[in-house]
Every structure is written in C-alpha cells, then in structure tokens.
Image (tube, rainbow, N blue to C red; front, side):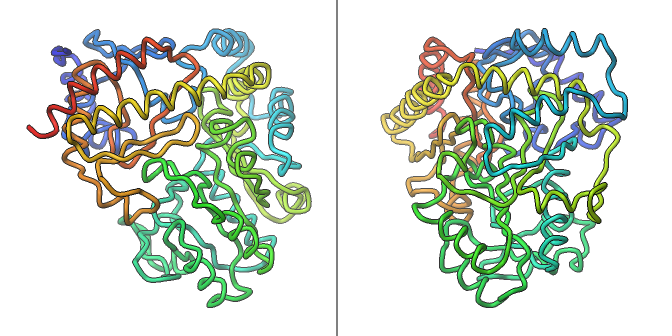
Length: 432
C-alpha cells in the first residue's frame, strides 16, 4: 500500500500558482477519478516513480507512445547522440527522410508524409488538405472520437443522425463547427443517411479506426468497409486517425489489421518515441497539394525536430527488427485483461472489456460498449473507486473511464501477476 503523498501535494499546490489547475492537460488533474495526481519523476521499463518515491506498474505509457517501455536503451542512446549535435535547426535534416522511409514501408497507403509537432496539428492539416482536394466543406466525425483540440473538431455530437456540430468547448463559435457532422460510431445507417442527405458535399470522413478516446472501442464487423465504400462512391476522402493505433495495434496500424486503405492517415505517439510529434500522409496526388508544391499551406518551426525524428526512428526501426513483439504484446495483454475481468466477476462487480492488441479498457458496465452512448452508461464512481484502489497498490491506470490503457514490451509476466493480485483487492473497494 502506498501512503506517501506529501511531496506530490506540495508540487501540485505550487503548480496551481502558475498553471491553470496546476496541469498542462486537463485529465492529469485526476478529478474524474476523485484522486490526487502524483508527480512523476522517473520511468524505467514498465515502472514509474513519483516525487514521494512510490513505485507503480504503468499501464498509461504516456498515453500510448512508449510501446518499448520507459527509457528504452536503444531510444535513449539514439536521443543522446542526436542531442549532442544540436536540439533544433529550423531546417531540413536527414533524420526526417530516415523516419519517413520507415513509415512508408509500414503504411502502403502513404506515398508521401509531412511531419508536424502534435496529433492535433496532424488532424487539423489533414482535414484542411481534404477540403482543398475535394473543394467541399463538410466533414464527418464520430461521437466519442477525439482528433485533437482544433476548433472544428471540438464538437459535442447530438443524438440525431447527421446532426450539425455543436461546439463542445467554450470559446468555439458555432460558425466554426457548422460544417462538422457528428455521427454515432459503429452505426452504418447513420453514415448512409449522412451521405444521402449531404450528397456530394462531404469532403472527408475522419475516424479513429480503433477508438481510444471513449475507452478502447473496436469497429463492428463491416463498419470500416461500409465507410470506405461510401466515401469512395461519394467522392469523399477517408481519413484514418491512427495517432493512437498506428504502430500500436499492428506494425501497419489498424489499416493493416482490418485490411482497409484510407486516403489520408494521421500519425503520432509512437513515431516520436516519447517526444512531441505528429504526421499526416497519403496518396501522392493529394499530398502534392501541400506547400511548397501546392496551395494548401501548413508550416511549423519545430516540425521534423531532429530529436523527435531520432527517437521515433529508433522506436519504429526496433519494431521492424522485432516484429515478434506484437504477438507477445497480444498474448500478455489478453492474459491481463481477461484476468482482471474474472476478478471483477468473482467480486460481483459489473465489468466488460474491449481489447485490440495492446490497447484495452475495462468498462464498469455489464453491457457491451460499442459507441459513445453505451460507454457513457458506465459507472464512473465505481471506476474511480477501482482506480484509487489500484493506485494505492502500485498500479497506474489511465485516470479516466474513457481512456484506453496500454501494455508495453517492457511489461513482464510478473507485472501481470502483481496487477491481478492488486485488482482482486481493489474490486473489494468498489462496493464500499
């Protein structure tokens, strides 16, 4: 049991003097789980340590990018070497092409790729490019899918089919989202209705092919195929947001796993090896519209930063050289996820789960979770009690019912067994 929190509390109090809520991203405040955020000072392999010297088995992995674990030796060595040559130049470097070449090898749908500094920039740029290519205004997104905090994508989807977007954040005028159509995920009929109602007006459909931002939710059988057919027949582009699933659920992402070829793909997380990075890419005829070749403008001083490129290349190259990692991740993840679910059943706690490779979520509901409506029926208070129980027992989970958890290649059988033992104790607290 962990009891030391004094240093983290002092650090949180100090941070709140300078930073809104004391955090640089809202979920880090731990408010959704009724807990105090630990301040992390070190990571190694599958473990984290906070400012109070508490040790955790980490299933967050910096929200996904650390597929090799914390401070992976090959990544750190490459990063140190790159940093010794300079941290940023605002100019082209060979490292950009090195990483780009690996991305194109893994993703046959990408003929050319442009690097940016975040997933938000990647999705924002991909949508701008889709509109430039199709000369249309409307985009389709899905309730529960998060594509960064660009204004046009911060839409709270209504229950109606093909509902015009309503901003989901203060400071976003309705005019900015009037061309965003928000649909329920995994609903073919809603998608077909949208394409019928907005015939020849939809520039693109953007989707997380494996959703990670309402918890892990896989596509229903035939759903992505339906999406691909409708976009192709309707002259729209299909954008796979694989910022989270790219190199995670398979070497070639969800498009390899489900054998779907999108027109554009956005990437991030793993291709930065733990450093800030994003990318968007696709067919050459589309990408050639990007400046300086074409009229679609996008730029960034830190795009293709040499440190991010080096860390990303080291990570992705390791995955190419050790493809067996994916089988190992799948096997260990299945053991962990099903084991925790059995512990919930034994404790008479309603829990269901979704897993795609090393992405997974335990949902505190007895019903299947296939979209945002079903996800939103989860018992958030029960999850919060479970989360706090696991944290006290040295297991670090995503501090939200609606975020995916991740396993890394650094996790071991011993980690899983320790986690299962903690879960059995933590589920006893859910009824308390």
